[in-house]
Amino acid sequence: MHYALYMRVRVKPEKRDEFIGLITELAANVKANEPETLVWEFLQADDPDEFVFFECFTDEAACERHQCMDYHLAMSDAGWACLSEEPHIEVLHGLACGT
Image (cartoon, rainbow, N blue to C red; front, top):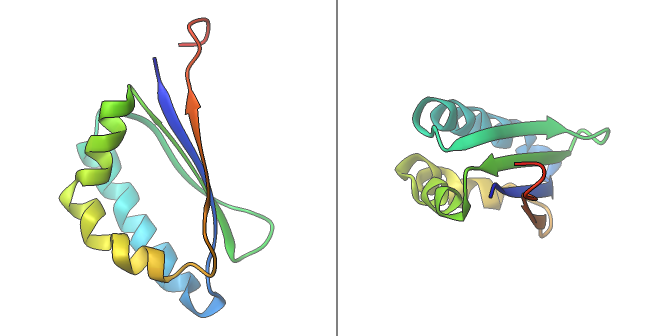
């Protein structure tokens, strides 16, 4: 069954460009190195300081591998430091009829 994450974050206005740069680099690495990552989207909300991630993996183990990749770990502290508040994260599970 597919395993997915929905994450909504708000960044500090002065950290917005840094955050976008970090995530743009992460996205390139994910797309180049993670075939078990089926969908990895970084979207901007109407508020210019609010972003949404939608990530879908072949399974939970693929998500765990994604989170442990060297390039993900290397940017994580800097990325979290850009946030102005705790993120909203939801874990989603595929249904047998839809996967």
